[in-house]
Amino acid sequence: MIWYRTLPSRTRIQEELHMQETRPFVPWELMRDFMEQVFQKEGVPEADAKVCTEVLLESDRRGIESHGCNRFKPIYIDRIDAGILNPVTEFEVVRETPTTAVVDGHNGMGMVVGTKSMQMAIDKAKQYGMGMVAVRNSTHYGIAGYYATMATKNNMIGITGTNARPSIAPTFGVENMLGTNPITFGMPTDEEFPFVLDCATSISQRGKIEYFARAGLPTPAGMVIGRDGKPMTDSEDILNALNEKRAALAPLGGIGDELAGYKGYGYATVVEILSAALQAGSYLRMLSGFDADGNKIPYPLGHFFIAIDTEAFMGAESFKKTAGNILRELRASEKAPGCDRIYTAGEKEYEVWQFRKDKGVPVGEAVQKELTGLRDRFGLTQFRFPFE
Image (tube, rainbow, N blue to C red; front, side, top):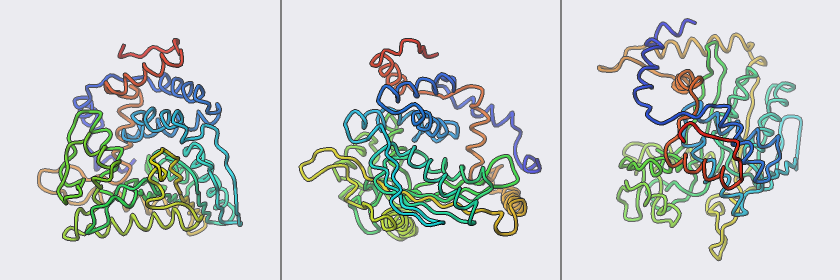
């Protein structure tokens, strides 16, 4: 492949990752089988358990640990236990045209809703060139990039977004109003991996702060603002403060408009509107997760999924070649002093997978305790982990 000529050697990259990684690895097959079994013990049907596990592990394959097995227990298992996430997913199509659909997820497993919805958009695009599905009353659906990649595997452009519980303060505000609201694009290329831009519209998402807290690390200054307008760095305190509305995440660009924070604020609002208005769903404070009496309730999230068939334009091969040429030219452009590499979106994730595919999922101490705790709770004695 031509693109390798612009990159450092594979051996060097793997050596750098190896030097940085000190956590034990759990083989992919072992982790997959274990997570599927736990989901089923929680009442998730077998086929749906496989889907949910696949979405979570894909996050770890790409190195996006804020949405992988780190969130298996706290976001999914604990919410099922709390009665705010339905293990059995009712996927209801409430309105449909040849190119569009509105779906109600009835607070079921977001990964199941997301996978079925993007597949519906892809099927429509195969027939009509484009397809879009809007979803209401869903739940956390994992990494948005998973669904965009479903489209790229079909030589299609995939676009998806979701709203989330309030975390971002609008520019010149301090109250958490908007979710981290990722807007994600996936585009097929003639390289070994697609172009996938998967990122929140905040500087950081809540999941990364959860990761910092679990790892005992501070949150870099500038990512979170307190009600006093000052930055916060204590990760544990930030998580509590976000729930208590004492803090908010900063939008992309940062606080105020000096570094164009209004752009991140604007994009977050775009996602909020598309995630709610198309399907008459919930938005902003309606997604807090609490009722008027302070009791926990489901987060009735909205998503949208768009598939565009590149074959309907100048052909899939033409699109992929041009996209690949653009990426190769970007990577081959002049580097800044002290920098020997320019990346394009999706490339780092591909490199992480090359490093991890024969090793497994790296797990820290906090996740290790969660895994063994779930095993003991459900009596899954057939599972033994390498870190034990």
